[in-house]
Structure formats: C-alpha cells, structure tokens
Length: 431
Ligand SMILES: NC(=O)c1ccc[n+]([C@@H]2O[C@H](COP(=O)([O-])OP(=O)(O)OC[C@H]3O[C@@H](n4cnc5c(N)ncnc54)[C@H](OP(=O)(O)O)[C@@H]3O)[C@@H](O)[C@H]2O)c1
Image 1 (cartoon, rainbow, N blue to C red):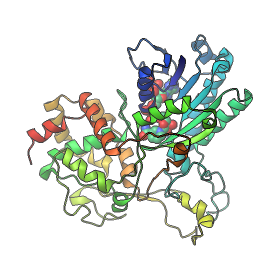
Image 2: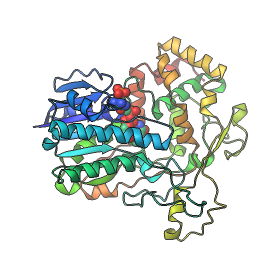
Image 3: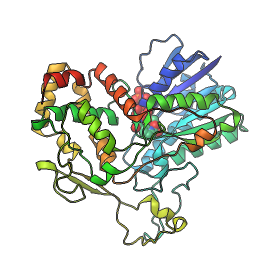
Image 4: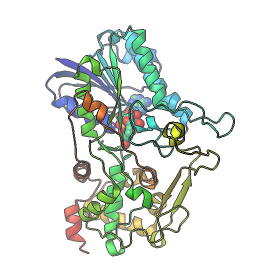
C-alpha cells in the first residue's frame, strides 16, 4: 500500500499522473497540491490548495499532516526571462522540500520524481546533437568564440535538479530521485489551454471553414521534413509510476520519456488534413518555406532570429565539424503563416465564431490558446529526437503511437467543448 503527493495536479502532466494513480490499486492515498482545485472525485484523493511560491514555514503549516512515500513534482510556472524562470521554479521546489523537512514528512519519502523536459538539451535555443541522450554534456560552459563572457542562458531544469540532488544528500540519500524529460506533451487539463494539441486542433478546425478548406503547414519547410519525438501525457504518467516502483538501480537517474516512435510533420500533417476534412495544399510551400520569404497566399509570415548559438556548436570539437562561431548561422524560426497574427485576422475570427456558435464551443479556449507555442513547435528547422535506449535498458517497455495519442487528445478536446467533433465538421461543411 503506497501513498503519493502530486504537485501541479491541475496541469497537463500532473493531471495525468493523478488519473493513473487513482487507477493503480497499490496507491491508497493521494495528496494533490495546486492553487486551483482539480475537482477530482476519487475517495483516495485529498486536495490541498496551496501556493508553492510561499515560504517553507507557510507551506509546512498547510502540509502538517501530509506524508507520502512518493512525490511527483509537476508544478511549473512559466516566465519569459531565463533567470526569473530559474528563480521562481527553483524557489518553489526548494521551499517545498524544506517544508517536508520541517514537517518531518521527508523521513517517510522513498522516491521523488521531478518532471523536467527537453529544454535540458537546449532544444529551445537551436539545433542540438541528435539523438538527444541523457548523458550529453549540459550547456553550462562559456559560449566559446562568441565574445568575452558570452554564456549559455541559465537553465531552470539544472537549477531544479541541483536543488533535488542536494536535498537528497542532506538526508544521507535515504530517498532517491528520478528526473523525467518529456518532449512536446500531448494531453489536456481542464482550463489549461497552454498545449500544442489545443492550438493545433483549433487551427485545423478553423481552416476547414476558410475558403477552399486548405490546411497549409504554418511553419518552415525544413521543420516539415525534420524528425521529432512527442510525449503523451498518459505515457509520461505511466512512466512516472513505473519509475517510482522500479528497482533501486533506477533511482538517481535522468530519463528521456517519449512515446517511443519517431515522427515528423510530413507524416502527421496529411493525416491532420484528412481528419479535419481539409485539403493538403498543392504546393505546400509556394514561396520556398525559408526565412525572410513572403507568407503563404497572402498570410503574414514571420522570421525570428534567436539570440545565441545552436547548442550543436558546443559539440563542434567532439563531432569534428569545422566551426566558425563568428559566422555561424543564427538559430532562426520561420513561419509561412504567423500563428499569432493568423488568430487575430477578421476572416479567421469570423470562422471561429461560426464554429463556436454552431457547436457551443468554449470561447476561453480560443482566447487562451498558445499560438506562440505553435510558433516555436512548427517554426524551428531542427529535429528533436530523444533516445529511449536508457529507459529500455532499465526495463521500461512502454510505447505509444504518436498519431493515435494526438487523435485521443483531440477526442478529449471534443468532449470538453474545446474542438468541434471532426465527424460533424466534415458532415456539416462539405468541401
Ligand atoms: N506541457 C508541455 O508540453 C511540456 C513539455 C516538456 C516539458 N514540460 C515540463 O513539464 C513540467 C510540468 O509542466 P506542465 O506542462 O504539466 O505544466 P502546466 O500544465 O502549466 O501545469 C502547471 C501546474 O503547476 C501548478 N502551479 C503553478 N504555479 C503554482 C504555484 N505557485 N503554487 C502551486 N502550484 C502551482 C499549476 O496549478 P495551479 O495553477 O492550479 O496552481 C499546474 O497544476 C514543467 O517542468 C514543464 O517545463 C512540459
């Protein structure tokens, strides 16, 4: 019989973990922690409304009677500034661990599972060495050749992992830790529209109503043909439960957690078009789909030159590639349709309103959809493929098909009134 604390219980990864813990008979007590109440009805669950930005003392009073063998830490606060991201998320984790020390709950802890992600490798900064392996060097050294004092930006996952390792060693390693690295999570949590599937599903549904029902890929041509891995929130949750219960050697390790297949937009996009009853444009990239070119058929394009260097430059010597940092191309995003401007167009909004009114859809989903997430996910020209070899060597056998997981997420979004039923959409708006 086991018990667990889940922080970030209302979020995409945390919500899925709670769902899987509820189904697992070996867990008899679950404490869910977040500022909002996830509203789950399972009798195993005791919810604690808590702001993890508070002091450790304050948190300890809220957590006075709470103790569990396993902690799943999925709380996360976004911030545009990398230093602030480290400070905010580092403080939440550090104060939470100190609160467990103050209440004495830390003595009952067996394993702490912390959810991080592929930003560990710098995929948000540019092209990295592929595939991404857990023992790849961290981006901690100076950014050689980029001018005196040039550094990689601070990485909040490194901050969190140091806090976690230090806390375990302070307690004589009586408990151990696991860090998971998911990539572009496919999942849903009520009221949380900050995810790829919501924005993608809305883009496809609205495109169905635009003249010609074409579904142009908003991003760049190189990104269309690049390879990626995705992580289903359910798959990630199953991995976390497996890792918590796994043998001792699994502890104190960082693991990539992806579905186990390698995918690409070139494969997924035509399937999306078919699912939503849209046409694949001929040609998909009439202006070449490269930076600084005009948008698709009169839509606004967007080119974003990112500061810094591709993380691959940190590996130039090991890989034996000639490298001249002063002339190296700057990491660049290109979108032949700028999703943020697209979502503000009058014709797009008219189409959304027609959909919303016909199918009773959730206006807050449209307003809260993260178009900037699509800007990054579709605009990058580089691959992001995480290897699952390490987890498999430790005995993990889980697998999920990315397209099936995406479809399942769309079905949930349909049930939640975020997306129209694709079947009805196709029947009601024939091409
Ligand atoms: N989503 C993705 O595509 C993705 C991909 C790769 C990696 N990751 C990583 O996965 C981790 C978890 O992210 P997620 O996507 O699950 O996040 P999320 O959906 O944004 O959820 C964040 C959770 O943290 C809670 N939270 C935020 N601030 C809090 C505070 N001050 N006090 C208490 N709880 C607070 C939120 O609950 P309340 O608002 O109710 O407090 C929510 O439950 C992060 O490290 C993220 O970088 C996510």
